[in-house]
Length: 248
Image 1 (tube, helix red, strand yellow):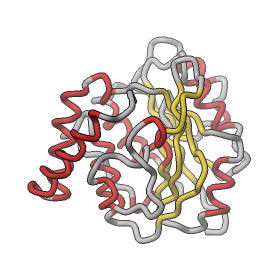
Image 2 (image 1 turned 90 degrees about the horizontal axis):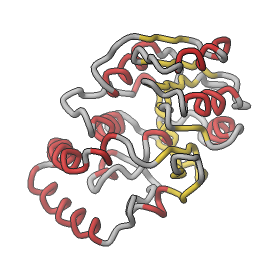
Image 3 (image 1 turned 180 degrees about the horizontal axis):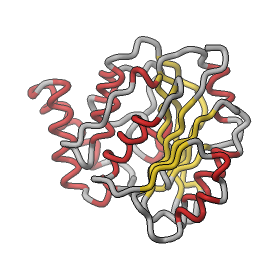
């Protein structure tokens, strides 16, 4: 793969306040081998009109009702045909115009390419790196066991070969992303850390809005992958760490 094609998948629903920034960050990329797939949940707030302004840069656009975020992300995977996939949702942007070019130049032919994510507020102001604002540190050598204490890499900063990417398990309406990442990493042999920021994303989201439900669901996910007893002790550590963690 001298010049791999990356399928960037954006899912959105009534995201008129943020979708244009997301699309612009894709359009601005110096890496030209991009298949851009947008899955819209039948928005009624003008999101589609904004997307239409950039229609010649959007490879596939599907707008229909769905069963939630992860159902929409699965639809994106079904429509993607690139060598790699990256989920860049409507609150996310690629960090710089040369982000993908730098990533593929540094990490040629790796199964997974990953890096840092920058937290931003509702107005887009940078708040700091996710690894600085939370207890989660991006590991130098990522594998499926790296996530036993939580999601150390944001899916917005996680690029994976499409043929190795699993579908999202809809039994987990809040934490399907960590389950997806663990399951997908089990299929990967070569992972490459970029050492730079891949994306920005706004703080908040489903898991922060439903924190207790998210904790319970994540416990189930991690127990399934790592075993009941190891997961129990891992969550004792997670609970203690949470007491001393920063607000994000």
